[in-house]
Amino acid sequence: MVNRDRYWAYFDEAWKRVIERFFPQLLHLFVPNLYFDVDFKRGFSFLDREMEQLSIISLKGAKYVDKLAKVYLKNGAEQWILVHIEVQGYPDKEFSLRMFRYFYRIFDRHGKRVVSLAILTGSEKGTDEGVFEFKAYGSGVEFRYLFFRLMDYDRDRLEEDTNPIAMVVLASQERERARQKGARFNAKRYLIRRLYERG
Image (cartoon, rainbow, N blue to C red):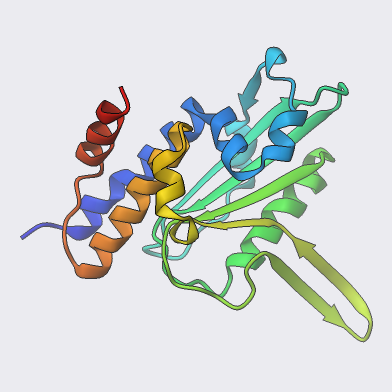
């Protein structure tokens, strides 16, 4: 019998590689206004050491992919971007709290502006998506982050999109449908076939 946890575990590493290899394309698909402001001629870098220092111990069984990137905007400003991907896709009551903790830890430690992106591969929906509130008697904080659920993207548009991240989103949708049915899904085979069809 196939160990489902082992079978799906490679998606963690796959997403890390996707982010590292296609970071500009990822921004173009999810945050186009940011993409057009970035000066990619100056390059970009991933702050893995900083991310390790800020890492939050996750609950047993949860699968998260976190990447912290540094880019330069065309106006010369430095911009940090936190990309958080929920690989497992199960509901998590503390998801928005975790996003806020990353945000304030980065700001507290480094004093940098942060664009926070959350990409969910599952289909389950929560009640606090895109916002974290912590208030009492008129005092407190409201934190907002960019929130993208891959299952919400239109399949036909993704099929027509030449952005390689669109293919990754399609593969993620197929993987999630297979998970819901309790079936195995070979994402690599699907991606290779679709990329081959596109030449």
